[in-house]
Image (cartoon, rainbow, N blue to C red):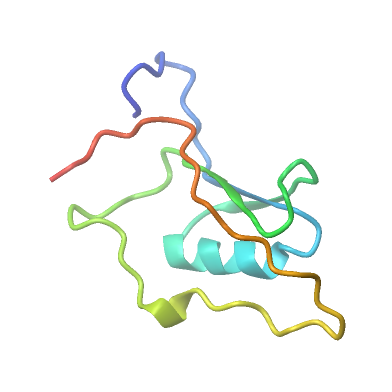
Length: 98
């Protein structure tokens, strides 16, 4: 549980929110994490995902590591839109576990 989360207010299920056209990327994240409900969400900007970590996510003491090939872009569309830079964004502070 994240420090500061009141008992009874925990997020139980990990959710992976994705915009229109982002389901393949969301599925890759779900596969990498080993859990997560895919949630279509048009408030998430194109080219980004929002992962809300729940208590169902088990992180090994060594952390989450995936080979670079584990997260690959989906096949190119016939008329792809210009790529948007992806910047990670944390919405909560999670203490480091060593």
